[in-house]
Image (cartoon, rainbow, N blue to C red; front, top):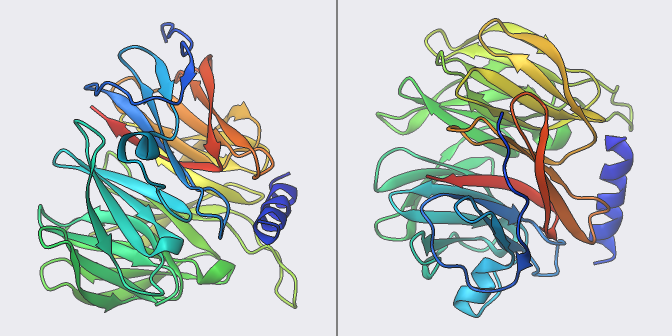
Length: 347
């Protein structure tokens, strides 16, 4: 169960279709740059500084682990959170190291470290334009304005408590305010003025955000775990129309959920307690169980439609990535670093 896996993760913190060929090997060597592949951000254990970056090369079907260290001769940092690819560069958010590492996607060479300041905890990043990105900062109740051209923070925009996911659509940014499990709102930022533009009430613990092919916002609300006088609630997806700034539908997921991704065909995948659900994002209804199992991250490769699922296992050992075709057939699997949780697709 996801609750048990969450507890094990806390313990770890405390103590520390067509066929695709299987990966040829898991090779801790410097990869030859390829035009298409998948980066996997492995969080590592809190306080241990053992976050890593893996790369699954979709041209030769080889897996390269600890790519950042192999190429740059230094560790990635403490708790790798997410990664965004933009204009030939990869931006890796390392939240407990308060920084963003920037790599050249043609070589994986580290070209810049953006220091976000002591206490910053970057979670998710979205580009407004080629020189400006917005980054959710978990502890400050703000979204940071990052000048990527200068490699520095250019200010902050107030939002709700403990912001996590962010998406940009219809000239606005929508931010999931998790409230560490107790939040019930999405903040809105006007991208023209980079100022707060209201909020939207949603269900408990919004964490993940995605945009459907129709331009609607899916906000994954993981539900409250209960305890301490707080009742347990269960996961839902709130469907937001960004033109109205309002919830127009909701989808019951059940249990608790950890991740959300939407494919180009309009299928949304939600990682829940014991299964991954497939949801038709055109009519906002659950199709059924895509695959069974408990996963900590989900991503969709837009061209092939393949679904990537991250299994962190017991949170203290190398995790495993499973790759499924859109019809639910397992294509391949491979081992990566400790606590894989985020994917970035290079095409």
